[in-house]
Image (tube, rainbow, N blue to C red; front, top):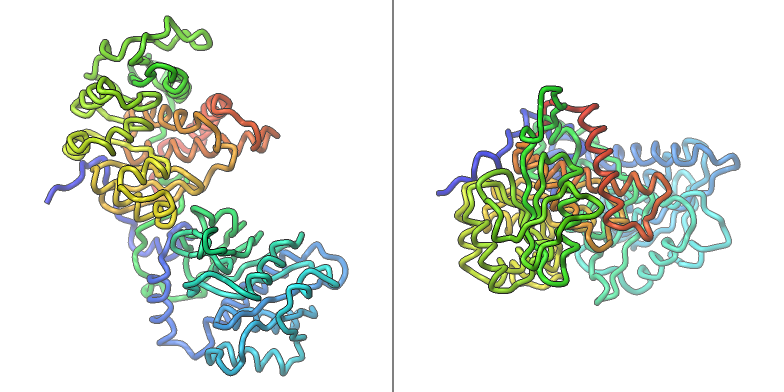
Length: 531
């Protein structure tokens, strides 16, 4: 069996750390297994009580600025998620509030714990009302709405009267706290269950309190639009009952060991060369953007290899060296290939030469489209022993796997893993919550970024950043994590400075990414990685 190159591998998590780490991500099946083991050794209803207590504490914090008697609506669905909401209502009543619970379930068909929770709510006098979208919208102006409609077990789209109810919740201008996951959102994939074609809908929460462990679907695809601010309540489950995580939410600590402060006694050769190859006729802007990003991400020298007639020089950045692609030397530094490359026979030949070169390689844009078209190129990529890093967006990923874009989006984690494994590469599957995967199946969901990145050329900038970090001797895994994190953080900083998200251009990301890189290096250089 072939093992991936050493640069793809990271140390296994230290014993037990994944059990306390809120960035560790668990699938629904893993959460179910942990929950089942935990419930075997504790009295019935214990986990529901713990979940409700954590949720009530967060609710009180969200209501701390409400001066009058807070008006709280809890929507309780037909399962244990609804039971959590009912117990939470009792705790809020004990705290002096007067919550209202909209009961969206047949009491006779509730699970035992949820049924007991309903009986307790009735006994303590919590106000219970029938499902009604109009009661959500008015006459009360709610200070907080709690979504306890469905948890992680929902398998079909929300429909009928409950569809209207979720629509009413989404129309409110107040905090919405989702228990475990926003109702209607797939906790594994981040997709709205049913999507647009089947009329699916999901609660748009401002806050999500997720139980036992963090879930990937809260952080990718539609998840970030629906989950809001995510907190984890582990419910005091014994550490030995957890399973090892295979995915994490991205953080600086995962790549900080590769950050290095620059020595006074260094020179341009200390920081490597990057060759950016692309620029077929009519597409010269893409490699220029990528090259500018590589230069401002710390590469010692940057070359642009054009398939078409090369520019004499880049007027904005004359330090970039323009060549014809056939003139580039593939014996040193790192190569970024694909921005504006096209899919001609000439492009195919240049890509094959890069794949056969003994140097780190970033494959973007048309390089990915060529790989999807030609088996011999894929075979050359899979056979490489030097680091390879692929940066597909969902359509490019679909072409690589010969599936549809909706299929990619409905299974982003597994798609990233599949491409990484088949192509023996680290993969950055771009999009909301970009997924970074290794050939051995480990992955990270990036936590930075915003809609400002939805602009032409932002992917070219990311590819150039990846190439620069590889040229500076970052291991390929660290380069992918760091570039993706800094790329997203640059967009976040622009928003913080009042620029965007509407109308941000890719060029504006480059100087901000440089600032982010310098700040990270000063603050975190040389620290040990968390995973």
